[in-house]
Each structure stands twice: as structure tokens, then as C-alpha cells.
Amino acid sequence: MERSGNVKALVTGSSSGIGYEIAKYLDELGYELILVSRYKKELEEIKKHFKNNVSIIALDLSNEESCYELYKAVTDEKIDILVNNAGFGVHGEFIYTDLNKELEMIDLNIKAVHILTKLFLKDMKKRNKGYILNVSSLASFQAGPLMASYYGTKAYVLRLTMAIYEELRRKKYNINVSILCPGPVETRFNEAAKIRSAISGMSSDYVARYAINMMFKKKLIIIPGFTMILSYYVSKLIPTKLLLKITYDIQKKKEKK
Image 1 (cartoon, rainbow, N blue to C red):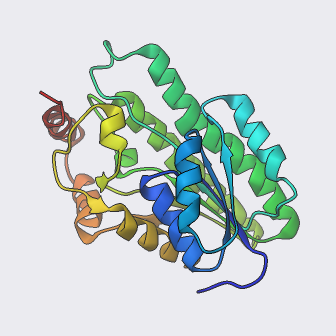
Image 2: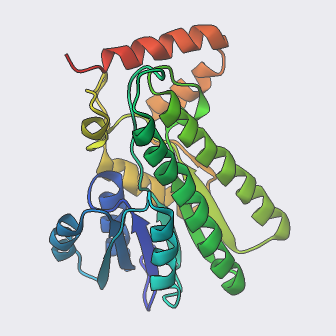
């Protein structure tokens, strides 16, 4: 699966967690990298860990203009792989959660993914090749009491990606879009959302490698881990109101005391 020549991947939210591990694995496979995050110092530090050419761009993609700025900065780079990983969550009862924080989350989790997917997909269409991996969550398949807005943003990304996949398939383009839907993963997500893990998560390294391998196999929906795949299918058999109660209880256990 290793690549040779001038092949490039752009990974957002790549200063830590799944994004960093995806970038590290793509580096192993021979890709030149463009790493994007709002954390410039962290990007400068992790840049030392890669063997291939790495460019870093520090931008806050929750700002719509930053999305266009990013695209313009790399428009001549001929990106082979786009990974839309940047995102965060907000925990709490919807009536009490901070509206401004939620709107920032919607801008990053939805609007940035939408803009970047569209812009880079147009370029890939011209060359008739490329991969896009949008990072969602197992949460995208259901409603999430106590994380209502976050679950909603991930559902949007899931449905958007699925629809684009079919449009590309019908036209027989040599372009693939995939959606990564992991369960709990050991990252800084919980810290940012101000919650604690209710169950132990998978390693971000495992999730990243599994995701990229499945992306290259052109799998549409990527769910790492047998337990998470099983929970996905089991959840389809549970009545909606019962599933809401179960999800609420799980999220309640995550509250920091």
C-alpha cells in the first residue's frame, strides 16, 4: 500500500488523537502531508515526527473564512486524500448548554466539513481520482440525549457522505468518499467536552490504521472494532424510546463529579 512520487494528503484536526494517528500512518505509506489545526505550537512539535515532507497550517476551521483560506493556500497542491477530522463535542442538557459554543461546534463539525468536501471534491473530479474520509461517530446513527447537538452534527456528516458516495458511484468517478464512525476512542475529546469516559475506548492508532485501510478498500461506512459493529446492529433492534433512555443513562455516567 506504500506510495511513491508526489502524493499528498491533507488532514484537519491533526495535532492530536485520531487526526494525528491518521497523518502518521499516511506518512508511513509514503504520503506528503499538509497538517491543519488551530494549535500552531502542537503542529510545529509533531512535524518533527514525520519522515516525508510535511507542511503545517494553523487555522480555526470553525471560522468559515478560514475554510476558504485553507483551500486557496493548497489549491495548487493536487491533494490526493482529504481527511475531515476536526471537530469537538458539547455535553449537557440542551436547555442549559452554551449556545455560542454549540454554534461554534456546528460551524466546525458541519460547515467546515461541508465546505472542504465540496471544494476539494470539485478538484478531484477534474483529475478523476482521490479519496475523502469524513470523520463522524457511532453517535451519528441515533439521537443523543445530553449531547443532542453533537449527535446531530455527526448525523449530518454521515448522511451527507452517504449521499455523495452514491452520486459518485452512479457517475463511475474514480473518487471515493468514506465515513469513519468510531465508538469511544482514547483522545482529548472527553477533555474538550468536559466529560469522563463511561467505558474504555479503543486506541487512536488502531482506529486510524483501520480507517485508512478500509478507505483504500473503498468501504463506505467504517466502524472499527467488532464490539462497536455489534452494538450498531443491536441498536437497530431496540425501540426508539428505549434506546433514548439507554443513551441518556450512558451520557449521564460521563458527567464529571
